[in-house]
Image (cartoon, rainbow, N blue to C red; front, side, top):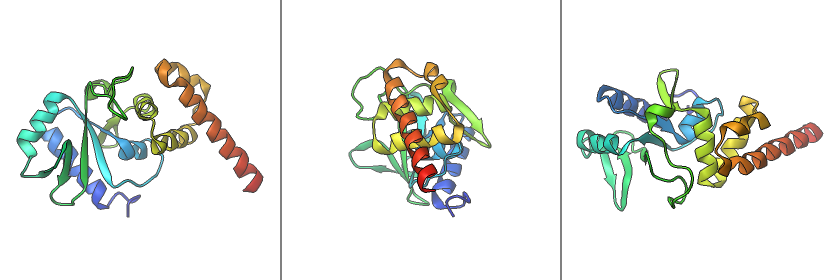
Length: 186
């Protein structure tokens, strides 16, 4: 059901997008749902959305607590009251991963949003860069898979911030190791 886009996570994302667009709040879908939009199929149980600080305030004013419930001690995490799907809001100017200051920040969604089908998602360069900067296992796995489905190579490096280029090279090497393994054992 997930890959048919009829599960509760997709439905929650579509409702969110409809609400944000109607309210004219700039957004870009991130995380696993953005990875899927860029053609790497994997499941996820939440929706991540990029908003500006002003967009987050408007979201809270319009939709919390009526449509989305707050989560204790997590000021940017909400729960869709219909589906119980978690919504994480990533905010322009904040730092990916640990949240500690670094060279890469979450950008303005209007600058990095790309319409894929009917949803605005973060563009491929930004998605890969933020996933590498977050430095989590699942994010590196997503980058390896995006390299595969998008047929990326070293020429993509020039599009990335210098601080994540070595990690991208390591993901490229991992993809190539996986290809060799498949060729030998496929």
